[in-house]
Length: 281
Length: 352
Image 1 (cartoon, rainbow over the protein chains, first blue to last red):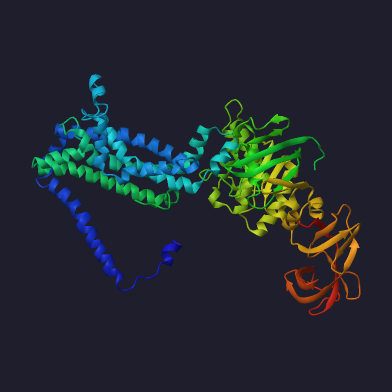
Image 2: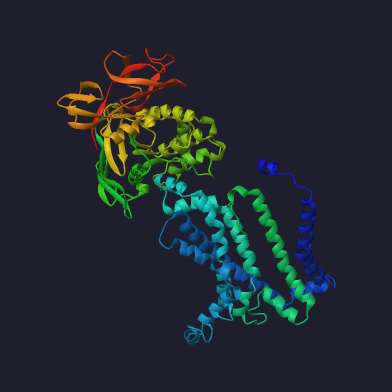
């Protein structure tokens, strides 16, 4: 609170700058959002609901949920493990691991999809082996999961590392000297200390996992009702000039975005102290 | 010391290096049961590394640690039953004070774990031992630094440790609280009767608290002894310097006579012969009139500094900063006057 009070008063031009930024935000973010819902409901509620009840749409929703349900827990576990290593221990290759975690942020999602095609596609490195044993990865659910995991893996780790570094390892060491086993230390000391930051990271990871387009698009093959996730479904319908259908599906994704935003704000507001201070999102 | 002379802790030939930097060099020392041992040294002297070796957080490259005859190095941290207290408290921030204290009991295997009511009773006992009876339901963030450190002590004592390890426990507290807690810690140690190893860089704290003080420098044990013995006969110039303010002057020893400037006196027994360095405390000086015995000194400046008086004196071509206590100046001392000064307990070291 005191920080807010100590802020200098705004000079005369500041209200204009605030107004300008609100206008920019409105035209770039709020207007498109409103348009999504407007176009989805352009022909009234029944066509909107029908578009969502259509078998392909239901299949896309289910597939999106399935992929997220696999990828997000995997990345939560991976993120906690990586953050634990990096924040609590000093070892050779530590900064290399940090760079590796950031890699998906810096490369195009299309590349993140393409690497799996190069590995497991029909012409890929293991393509022959997979074909012989009748294992489908590309153009199937495993490929979608792999692509999503790769793209979303920095979210949880990035959220936890600064917080865990700030907290240090003293509490864990104290718990060890008090006779706790490694797992007990993790469960009773580390996890409660990072729970809100973990939830925050999982939330962001989930939003991205469900909304991911580029990487998933490369490995999906766009088979309707089989390998189309919700974002891909939107694209397919839009290319078919089915505006209502496309915007109806898009409104689900937009709704997901809004829910994520509300939860994220609530977390930041209620548990600001338990989240890392130097946030970069 | 609480009567017993049994050796509890035996440290033999401990060496530890981080890469090419040696943190501990062949350190050996023992502690008796229920003894309060202080590890004193400047930062980088290896005192904290030694404490971490005792806790099991570091493994030495060489050497042996035994506790009660048992090979301590073979035990992992969690089986050593040492209570550790950290400079920054390291309390579990998401647990209440009572939960913090109970932690060491609740993590035991079901077969060794006390019942819930026993744990509650034990926590209540410990809370009253550290004089925080009503604060069991608070969280660490709601306590002052001094209170947090007392909770940390109660938490460490809850497991009935074989040994208490304190890593600069008062380092983060202000001077007033630090002094109060110091007395209190000593009383607590005497009542709990646990062998205690205490790391500090504050010589006053170590001399005030400990039964014996081990002084370390650059990974080596320089001197080990009772606080008074160490203070009165520092083994090296480093120890003399580290334990308090020091004046140093060149001198010579021939036979059993020590000469400093124009003053000759009895040399201490076993003093090195030839050119020496003489150390004395700036407040352990007797003043005499200019025609008396001692070193000729010319008082340059006198300044009151709180309870002390600082006296700048030119002695033998060298400016010394002396110190006197109390509201009145020693007789004959005043700015611009000539006096003679006599160090009461000069320590003589071979010139380096």
